[in-house]
Amino acid sequence: MRRAMVAGNWKMHGTRSSVRELIGALLQQKLPDNVDVAVFPPSLFIAEVVQALAETSLAVGGQTCAAQAGQGALTGEIASSQLADAGCELVLVGHSERRLILGESDELVAQKFAAALAAGLTPVLCVGETLEQREAGETLQVVSRQLAEVIRVSGIAAMARAIIAYEPVWAIGTGLTASPEQAQDVHEAIRLQLAAQDAGVAQVTRILYGGSVKAANAAELFGMPDIDGGLIGGASLNANEFGAICRAAGN
Ligand code: PEP
Image (cartoon, rainbow, N blue to C red; front, top):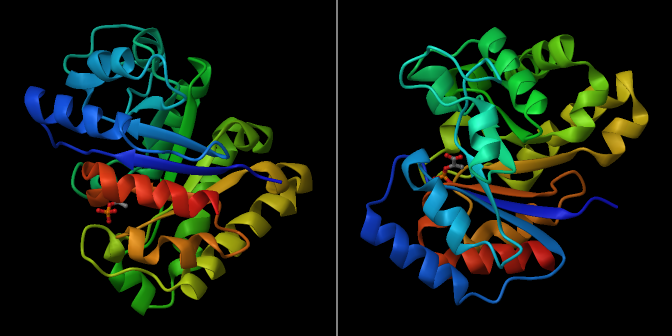
């Protein structure tokens, strides 16, 4: 039985005061005991969020990391080992905004995934197709290729130490959500891809759905057999909404 997870990606949002306010409101939420909850603040605020959530069960993650685990001369980057040192337990790799806007390739994402594992972090590997790719019938091919490169570099066993987030690009921040059936189809294909190499790994690896998840649609999505929770963008900036999504994952 896989434990449900809900992760909030705050992206490049927040000021010192709004982050303090959001943490305060999050601490007021009644969160279910049977769901792992994590937040991914902008790196500038990681130390503060780690400190504020220290006495809670909420985990903190980075939104990206360098492709090398150790420190070095790489201006502006953050090493996975530095995230771990700051108290992070997880890190997002391959978010579509970084793949598409910042040009991160499958190869670079796979290196970042390996660097995260090397630092003892749990990588949350984001995969997903664009609208054009979906319309061209390429969804499963694209997602499979993104996943295959990570498995090629880190090996299938590594996937049991990671989390996968299926995030159709056309559903991110657009208000368009994949239907539970559309999402389930891709989640099932991802699990079958894992199972083709290791059935045990496929059984335990959590696959989250991301793309305009809100309290109103969360329960339906999380009710699908291969959807183990959600990666939440916009709605994670509202503590009440995020809390309700976490409770939906616990039911
Ligand atoms: C995301 O960016 O990971 C995401 C899922 O965003 P949103 O929930 O806003 O669509």
